[in-house]
Image (cartoon, rainbow, N blue to C red; front, side, top):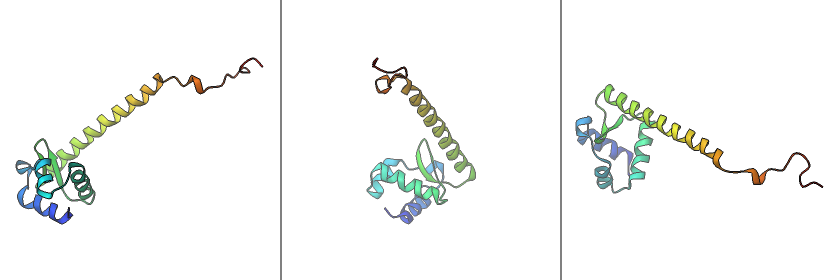
Length: 110
């Protein structure tokens, strides 16, 4: 998928939140899988292209507020992922690693 094609497509047909395109629609239009589409959108966002997203899909942001809503949504997702990581790290306490420890008081009585 060419980056310029995706930008142009969003600018022309999906400018503004009210004209958001679903991931499925974009996948079909550009003949790509979801992961490739998300990677491309992420790359463009990193370069400063104002591709926003919401409940209805992706769109070329027309206003600052559309970009700010997307940023807020992404930050919310980050905090959820961070909480899940903390929970998983805590779950590591449940795994018994005693089998790999050596006793400090001389071991097997030798």
